[in-house]
Image 1 (cartoon, helix red, strand yellow):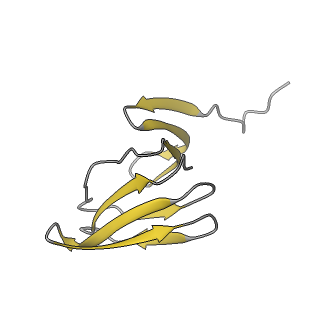
Image 2 (cartoon, rainbow, N blue to C red; image 1 turned 90 degrees about the horizontal axis):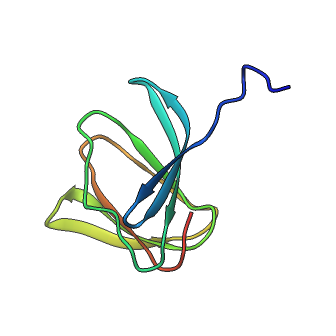
Length: 100
């Protein structure tokens, strides 16, 4: 018998891979595992109000991050590494290999 505490993980397919939503607290928090296929990128984006943390569990990401689209720094993230993004920070990730 399952506990009422147990929630299903929602899979959302994307052109670059898929997301697994494991936590969703309306307006407060969203926890996702993002699976990005090798060579695919997410769009360049920013968030007006929310903060975002990107942590690599497996694989390797090329990260582009900065205050403006014209001023982006590039670096790689590997398993065990993470970055925290504040509101307004432009960012895009590209999977150098299949990455979670």
